[in-house]
Length: 251
Image 1 (cartoon, rainbow, N blue to C red):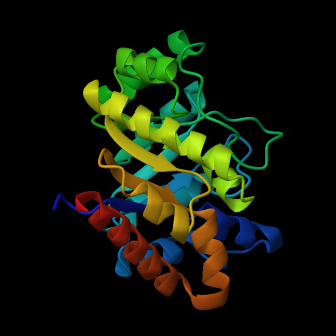
Image 2 (cartoon, helix red, strand yellow):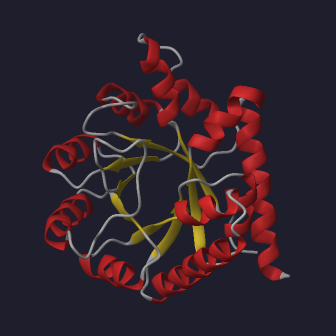
Image 3 (tube, rainbow, N blue to C red):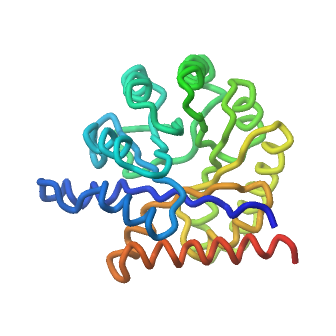
């Protein structure tokens, strides 16, 4: 069997909980270390323009102390590019960002934003940072992602997960087929394929059956489940679900 699908744990909402009251607890760094000890392959953190959860100091501490790769989610802006170049995370995932949104809504529009994205991708790659683009499983977006020089895409799985959650089987099937086709297209173009947004144990298992998927990035669900059973157990359960999905590839 191929190498296990990697799990990146997003610790943004540990910071959300901390910021609700102020102070330093719960500490996102401690959550990251616990996730890694429980089987995470890396840590994802989104430094937003408004610093609503992760803060600059969190990124600096994560980079300095983590034993596994740090994936910095960021908008394609001059401010965030400068922070990434200064911090030098293992990876940077370019995402769309609006201050009004609760969470990332949809994928990055690489087609429209081509001229803004190209120099950011170039600068990050020259610094030795692995660049991914968080996009919908849309053929034009995938083609453009390859054109701008990003070696990785992360497919936005939110619409599929929403359809699954609401029991809309027709929509869920259609969205899953879009993801499957998009992953295959990206692989043909030489892109590494990741996926994330809205995934839980059930959907993570299902998407790991797609052979081109090599990494999942999951945050909100894991942090939410950790309230009831602990972060370590939640990460271990997620790893088990992902392993079952990957094993189904050979059936």
